[in-house]
Image (cartoon, rainbow, N blue to C red; front, side, top):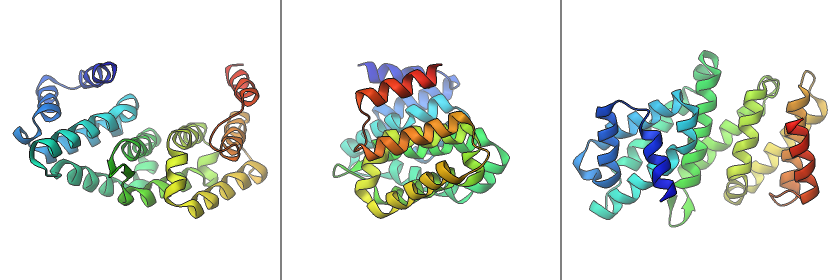
Length: 222
């Protein structure tokens, strides 16, 4: 019940017509243009970071409802096409708007987290998600606290799942992050703290000890 309330709340940020479109899609997906629904959700996710964090749940609900109602996957296919198009334009997006870029990464990771096929993450998203995280690990991104924060948040959320899909790429990503932490000049103290925390988080099997949690929490709140 709490989750549906969250979805309802997030939908309130749309105009009345779009709210109705989404409400119908969530309950009777066959009654609306699902390609349009996918476009609306992706567009809003790129503009609204709060929505990008929750949109995966809405996408999951629509996918489930469509499968149950008709056994088809029009919405999922349209959503993946939209994500792929935005993925191709990611460098342009980052150059134009850092906020939009961070929203995109947040959204694609959120979709990766929620949308499953036979209880497994969708293979089509594994490498695009990795590529986005590698981009956040590049030198210019590590000098930007907003991008480092996004990187660490996504690894907390989906790192364990992502590693199970491709261990070698996760190893490679963490080599990059370790080198960035040790060798990169110009990192802020917050960026260094976040990187150290995620390095320890993965080393601990994607969890922190109680001592580690207390240390990082106190450092971040000071």
